[in-house]
Length: 452
Image (cartoon, rainbow, N blue to C red):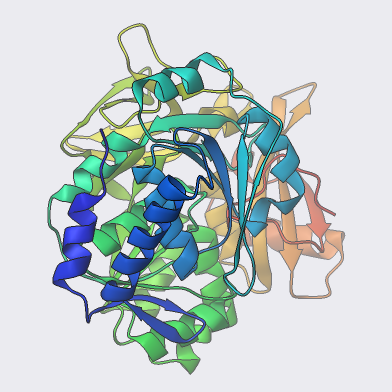
């Protein structure tokens, strides 16, 4: 059975150390250890939540949310983290996950618990409950379609954190409804590091917190790093404490990576690879300015079939609650990611579903976006395919500009800029100028939603 005793031992051994920074207040490991034990007592003795229940934890990172999450794991609950970023979809997600009790943590860190009228009946949920195992339900971002609910046994997710690694002060940028957020939280606390939270995930706020709290690790997305570059917030704050930026969740644009390397030359840039369905794999970039990386590590196997990455993982989900199984008959997860291979290294080219086919030629959106992002006045860009009677598809670019250009003016400038940088069939035939952000609440590019 999954147990958090190893974490409590670490907390007790570092009682005076800083565990969490929340709203400019510091919470020690001693405080965290007692908070977890207090919640454990209340869950067991006061009957707040039945052991094994499917529980939605509606909260952002806060001291109570973190301590309650750990106590719910020990109470063998199946946890469904839901943050403010999915506010409008909470009823839908609760229905899919068959939530039996709701725990809400308010702005002041106060806790409210209420039962629902549901009883979990999904075979995978029942399987965990009958085995007395804690679980975790994570919803995919839905940036390329419907959100899928991945159900994990929490035990294998916890297992890798029993091995001591580097202690770091980490930014809690990715929240715990995201596999990267769960990974950052457990990695940081299991190594007696400090989780620094921010009230808003804006470049100015994040950079100010890095400077004030001497943050060493920033786990984030390529889209957010592009916003940092556009805002130039890195110029207004002392980021000298920063040692490592890890980026994942979507394809990194080569132009963004190169620019980050220029503005923060002393910071290691590490590409990570993880999925809601599998957890986070250990990775090693060929260099800080390279998009090639090794992935795998203990508990993971990788292979490439027909140019697509497949992974077998000890920490793989049990399955989806609302979609067919994506596993092969022999247990490999089909990621849908197209990759190039060079010996031990792979380069993630993009989702197979996002590849644009122009007259039989493959166009990867990241290549088009990387070129256009270099243009003066381009804030955000998303390249997609649009059906065409002659070529099958043409490349369409949705662009958010900081200039006052018309579509015709920008299209002329874009075509001239891309000549020599992109093959002619890769240059967008259609341009749509938008005023809304081209990113989701999780700082991933929106590819299939309507943006105006």
